Length: 148
Image 1 (spheres, rainbow, N blue to C red):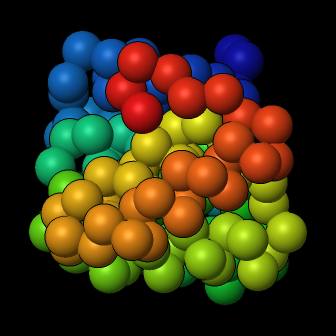
Image 2 (cartoon, rainbow, N blue to C red; image 1 turned 180 degrees about the vertical axis):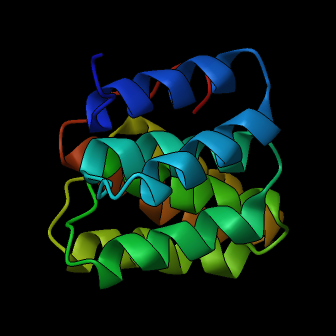
Protein backbone atom coordinates (compact mmCIF):
# COMPACT_ATOMS: atom_id res chain seq x y z
CA UNK A 1 0.00 0.00 0.00
CA UNK A 2 0.81 3.65 -0.06
CA UNK A 3 2.51 4.99 3.05
CA UNK A 4 1.43 8.38 4.35
CA UNK A 5 4.06 11.14 4.26
CA UNK A 6 4.37 14.51 5.99
CA UNK A 7 2.19 16.16 3.35
CA UNK A 8 -0.66 13.71 3.87
CA UNK A 9 -0.38 14.06 7.65
CA UNK A 10 -0.47 17.87 7.28
CA UNK A 11 -3.63 17.59 5.17
CA UNK A 12 -5.25 15.32 7.77
CA UNK A 13 -4.38 17.66 10.63
CA UNK A 14 -5.73 20.60 8.64
CA UNK A 15 -8.98 18.72 7.92
CA UNK A 16 -9.42 17.70 11.56
CA UNK A 17 -8.76 21.30 12.59
CA UNK A 18 -11.48 22.58 10.22
CA UNK A 19 -14.09 20.31 11.85
CA UNK A 20 -12.86 21.05 15.38
CA UNK A 21 -11.63 17.51 16.10
CA UNK A 22 -8.76 18.53 18.38
CA UNK A 23 -8.29 15.02 19.75
CA UNK A 24 -7.71 13.76 16.19
CA UNK A 25 -5.30 16.63 15.47
CA UNK A 26 -3.11 15.53 18.38
CA UNK A 27 -3.58 11.82 17.67
CA UNK A 28 -2.59 12.24 14.01
CA UNK A 29 0.53 14.20 14.96
CA UNK A 30 1.52 11.51 17.45
CA UNK A 31 0.91 8.77 14.83
CA UNK A 32 3.14 10.60 12.38
CA UNK A 33 5.96 10.83 14.90
CA UNK A 34 5.49 7.15 15.83
CA UNK A 35 5.82 6.28 12.14
CA UNK A 36 9.28 7.88 12.21
CA UNK A 37 8.40 10.92 10.11
CA UNK A 38 9.87 14.30 11.00
CA UNK A 39 7.51 17.28 10.86
CA UNK A 40 8.46 20.10 8.51
CA UNK A 41 7.71 23.84 8.75
CA UNK A 42 4.33 23.49 7.04
CA UNK A 43 3.19 20.66 9.33
CA UNK A 44 4.34 22.48 12.46
CA UNK A 45 2.56 25.65 11.28
CA UNK A 46 -0.66 23.73 10.67
CA UNK A 47 -0.33 21.95 14.03
CA UNK A 48 0.49 25.06 16.07
CA UNK A 49 -2.38 26.98 14.48
CA UNK A 50 -4.83 24.11 15.02
CA UNK A 51 -3.80 23.79 18.67
CA UNK A 52 -4.19 27.50 19.41
CA UNK A 53 -7.56 27.62 17.62
CA UNK A 54 -8.66 24.58 19.62
CA UNK A 55 -7.77 26.18 22.94
CA UNK A 56 -4.62 24.13 23.50
CA UNK A 57 -2.50 27.23 24.06
CA UNK A 58 0.27 25.70 26.18
CA UNK A 59 0.68 22.78 23.79
CA UNK A 60 0.76 25.20 20.86
CA UNK A 61 3.57 27.19 22.50
CA UNK A 62 5.40 23.96 23.40
CA UNK A 63 5.23 22.68 19.81
CA UNK A 64 6.65 26.00 18.61
CA UNK A 65 9.61 25.39 20.93
CA UNK A 66 9.97 21.83 19.59
CA UNK A 67 9.99 23.23 16.06
CA UNK A 68 12.78 25.68 16.86
CA UNK A 69 14.74 23.01 18.76
CA UNK A 70 14.48 20.77 15.67
CA UNK A 71 16.32 23.48 13.73
CA UNK A 72 13.33 24.54 11.64
CA UNK A 73 12.76 28.21 10.82
CA UNK A 74 9.22 29.37 11.66
CA UNK A 75 7.45 31.42 9.00
CA UNK A 76 4.97 34.28 9.37
CA UNK A 77 2.06 31.85 9.73
CA UNK A 78 3.81 29.97 12.52
CA UNK A 79 4.58 33.20 14.34
CA UNK A 80 1.01 34.44 13.90
CA UNK A 81 -0.27 31.23 15.50
CA UNK A 82 2.23 31.65 18.36
CA UNK A 83 1.20 35.27 18.90
CA UNK A 84 -2.48 34.23 18.96
CA UNK A 85 -1.75 31.38 21.39
CA UNK A 86 -0.17 33.82 23.85
CA UNK A 87 -2.94 36.34 23.31
CA UNK A 88 -5.75 33.83 23.82
CA UNK A 89 -4.04 32.36 26.89
CA UNK A 90 -4.24 35.81 28.49
CA UNK A 91 -0.59 36.73 28.08
CA UNK A 92 -0.54 39.96 26.11
CA UNK A 93 3.14 40.32 27.09
CA UNK A 94 3.89 36.89 25.59
CA UNK A 95 2.15 37.94 22.39
CA UNK A 96 4.28 41.09 22.16
CA UNK A 97 7.44 39.06 22.84
CA UNK A 98 6.48 36.57 20.10
CA UNK A 99 6.01 39.47 17.66
CA UNK A 100 9.42 40.86 18.64
CA UNK A 101 10.97 37.41 18.29
CA UNK A 102 9.52 37.23 14.76
CA UNK A 103 11.19 40.52 13.88
CA UNK A 104 14.49 39.41 15.42
CA UNK A 105 14.31 36.27 13.26
CA UNK A 106 13.85 38.59 10.24
CA UNK A 107 10.42 37.16 9.42
CA UNK A 108 8.31 39.91 7.88
CA UNK A 109 5.03 40.48 9.76
CA UNK A 110 1.81 40.69 7.75
CA UNK A 111 -1.48 42.45 8.52
CA UNK A 112 -2.63 39.50 10.65
CA UNK A 113 0.58 39.79 12.71
CA UNK A 114 -0.05 43.47 13.35
CA UNK A 115 -3.73 42.86 14.15
CA UNK A 116 -2.70 40.36 16.82
CA UNK A 117 -0.06 42.78 18.14
CA UNK A 118 -2.63 45.58 18.32
CA UNK A 119 -5.02 43.25 20.18
CA UNK A 120 -2.24 42.46 22.64
CA UNK A 121 -1.55 46.13 23.28
CA UNK A 122 -5.28 46.73 23.69
CA UNK A 123 -5.53 43.91 26.27
CA UNK A 124 -2.57 45.37 28.12
CA UNK A 125 -3.95 48.91 27.82
CA UNK A 126 -0.74 49.96 26.10
CA UNK A 127 -2.31 52.65 23.96
CA UNK A 128 0.87 54.50 23.00
CA UNK A 129 2.49 51.25 21.87
CA UNK A 130 -0.65 50.42 19.88
CA UNK A 131 -0.57 53.76 18.07
CA UNK A 132 3.15 53.35 17.28
CA UNK A 133 2.59 49.80 16.00
CA UNK A 134 -0.31 50.95 13.84
CA UNK A 135 1.79 53.76 12.38
CA UNK A 136 4.72 51.40 11.80
CA UNK A 137 2.44 48.93 10.06
CA UNK A 138 1.39 51.63 7.61
CA UNK A 139 4.96 52.90 7.17
CA UNK A 140 6.09 49.48 5.92
CA UNK A 141 3.32 49.48 3.32
CA UNK A 142 0.74 47.27 5.03
CA UNK A 143 -2.84 48.44 4.71
CA UNK A 144 -5.17 48.03 7.70
CA UNK A 145 -8.09 45.67 7.17
CA UNK A 146 -11.53 45.51 8.79
CA UNK A 147 -10.04 43.84 11.90
CA UNK A 148 -7.39 46.52 12.37
